Length: 103
Image (cartoon, rainbow, N blue to C red; front, top):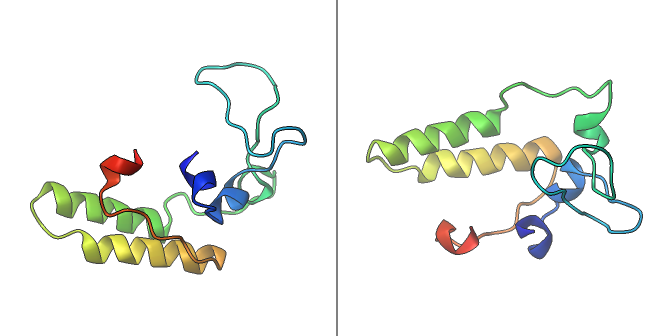
């Protein structure tokens, strides 16, 4: 919901739209097919090629480590966002600095 509410361009990269519902998530632990979005071809196709741990993920892990150890995670977080933008040739929208309000 957060990606859709913020018109985040990553949504269309991660998931395909369902014909009837657009982007629609399934309830947790649901088995079987339904009227839900599936992984987009960039991730779900048989010939999809992607890193197991991407540059962005590495930077986000480093930011979390900095945060937990009392350091400043800002540089690693910014680097992770830049990696995502470069990987998908997109501009990530700016979210609130207070993640609790987003979650």
